Image 1: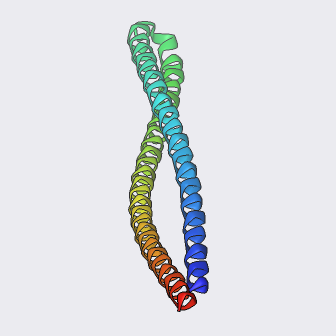
Image 2: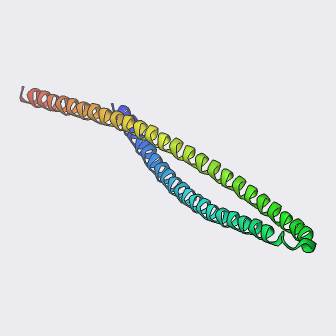
Image 3: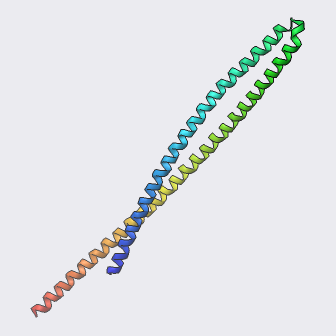
Length: 169
């Protein structure tokens, strides 16, 4: 019976260690979740900055196009100026395209981050359910231990009564 108590006590200690480890893992997951939220915020901020920059570049491109139209009146310089402006426009369009690609990449990263967050939240829910189940088992085992202790106490009382009875005779 003592070995059973020891086993149960060892099991309880084991469960307590598991609970402690799971709580530690939960804290780690929360820290990761917070870090992912920070990364998402930084990515959203970057997207906003890139959008503003993109709008600025588009405005610059539009301004350059208007300039090309006005300078078309100057016949001798128009060919050289037009070529230079078209190169500039092409560069801006390339930059805009690169920025759009960066925006798309940032959006993909945000989506990946959101997927990771969803997975972590799912993992946390699963861990909570496991912890709840383990806590339930620990409570059942504690109840069983208490019942066994009550039985032991009753048996010890009976033994004591039997000894007293046999001494009286």
